[in-house]
Amino acid sequence: MRDDRKSMIEPQSGGRLAHDLGGFLEHLLCHGIDVSISKEETLKQPYEERTDALLLLLSAAGRGLLNVHAMRRASEQFNHEDYLKLSYYDRWLRAMVALCIEEGIFSEEEWLVKRQQVKRQSEAIQRRKSD
Amino acid sequence: MPTEHSHGHPTDPDIDAHALSEGQILEMALRELLIEKGVVTQPELNEQMNRTASQSASFGASVIARAWKDEEFKRILLNNPKAAITDLGYDVSQMPDLVIVENKSQIHNVVVCTLCSCYPRYMLGPPPEWYRSAAYRARIVRDPREVLLEFGLKLPPDIKIRVYDSTADLRYMVMPLCPQGAESMPIDKLAALVTRDSMIGVGTPRLL
Image (cartoon, chains in turn brown, green):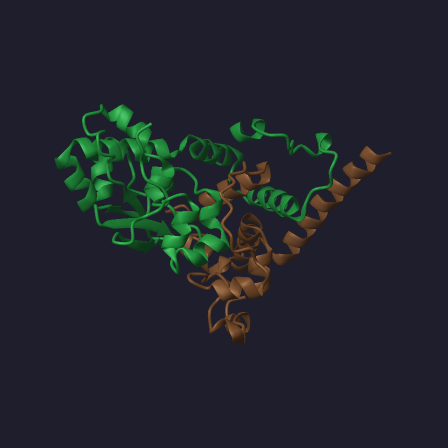
């Protein structure tokens, strides 16, 4: 995913990448995003808390492969639609996975196998519940 | 994990009747792989969650209140925040740089991270949801006066507003003005007036 930044830039976005939102009100409106600021403060879901912890651990100073700048680059490669559609932590999860694969921490195949395994476990538990 | 007890979403699949969401699947798969590969350990994760749970804006508030009471400390804090905080006995050497911008009678400061969600967590705890929102990031640099009004902060037209955009390497926070009439209060009472929002700049401290 390193060299395809150009394809991430939409012509109508004035050459901006998806994360570059400062002052970019029309962009949000044309993607149907509510531009009122919700002050409601909800508690994070447990998976979001754990994602937050993973993010801080992996981007902590002193960790060689996944430092804050590598993490930022990975998080800045979404196309506009995905960026605005995905939740904050779902974006970070995708960015972390992409970076781990890119850095060879695990292979894409290992990732797909693991994700499938977790998904199957979840479905199996659901089936047992509904029996 | 302390945060698991605060609300009603058990994560153990055996007690959760719902199928996992896409995000929950990604998180579980990523965490399990990273632990299997030895990149992170469960104790490290627990410790990180503990650290996060213990960070809050009350630390930033105590630092601001001290600066209100102690001119010399304030001078050092504005000049070199991390050195001043180190002097208080906290190790912030691994933390991103911090700049504290001081509100003046004619200048109000407010902080954003237009590119992401960069925030001085070690001073203020985790950022509120709205700070990370596309709407806040897009709008606060465009029409800060209107956005501040939405937060209930009506600034007279002659007060200048300065918006500071944080980055991964440099985080901003605001030193609000001490409310008139509060100057003689003890530090702990003053600290209670300094809200998180007043240190982001979307609020101001008020006498309780």
